[in-house]
Length: 282
Picture 1 (cartoon, rainbow, N blue to C red):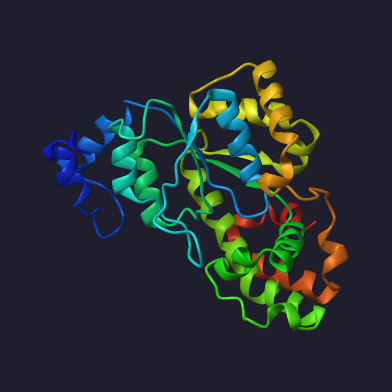
Picture 2 (picture 1 turned 30 degrees about the vertical axis):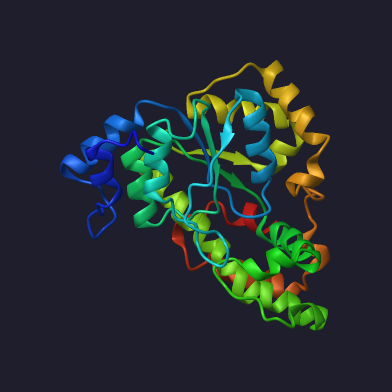
């Protein structure tokens, strides 16, 4: 870190505008810096194969995983600008950055995405299916139970009746998923070419094609053959990368009809999700 120049030090201690946008010399410096190196940004919700795809991406491009958020546990992910500055200044080596964060496209995050010229990738998957997979995870993973998702799981969660566990996931966790999709759909509508939207069912049928699209979108294109090899390598260790069942329709097996209706009702609060609502609740 001895190689940091005065501009980098000033940028690390600067703040964006109140609305999250970067402006003036600060913005110009960030934009100039960001052109130096590529970045693959997976802004997936939990339990949508983000860990799996980020690992396959690293294999395909000989990249490096960089934790670009301040902290993940118990809060929404927000990129941490000092870490980004270090990456673009070469402090983490020469390999391209691959980042995976459960990040909503809220105003502050949009400001960072715009300033660094990122082209994020998001994944569409049924919310009940993701909640079912999340339920499986917190049943056995102490860290996941402690982390939560912008919420606090009650310490006695695992001892609750199954119905009450389901109610907690639907009432407390599902609103985060609804907000996640609302923010990204709204953001993508402003500049459709900036955000790549993948579909989980299509990914499960042709994961190599999904990886190829993701890398091309990020500006680090690789052939279908390289992507297939990276997927196969990652698939052999998929349990290490939290890839569980991936089977569509699991949510209907985990949640009662009234709970599924509650999820559908949540989406009605967000007009941008009208066209996507059936896909997100099927």
